[in-house]
Length: 222
Image (tube, rainbow, N blue to C red):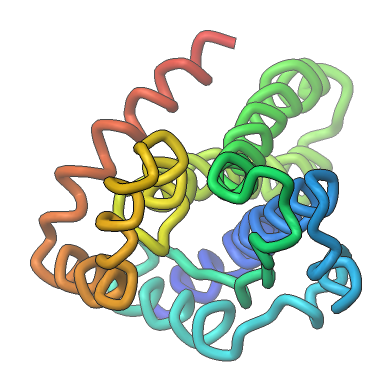
């Protein structure tokens, strides 16, 4: 029964998380392009084609492992980072921060869109559908949209951790004076090790969940 539950959760979660991480990366590249850096566009990364963004470990193996080991309760992943060349920006420090913020912003917009579709389209349509249609069509879509809200909020909150190379770290550097930003950037080579340590120890939840709850409360008021 547990295996069936896990397989069901993978089927429900796969599409929302794929959309979430792809749009996150595409948003980085799209905003960077608009600010003067065509790197992502020239490399064909401004596309919604999953093949261009899939990272074998981050997009496939890790999400499945997390879902299996958490007994279908948790799923997370990432796509191949979109390349950005700050040298193409008119104001590298500011524009890099804006490009970094675009990823979490896209996830929050996806979460808001999922809530709107769920509340104002799917739920009202219950009155017009048969019991069979509700069970086979509406219920799975509703579960995917619910998963989309949670995943996008958590992904946005996680990426806003103020640790470079995460988006939050890059945004912080954009606001700091040049001298302090240069000093802060020295954390970047060790950033992912710090993030991994926070995740393994469970301390990351104390940083991520308050922000995720704030986002969920705001979105819930729609």
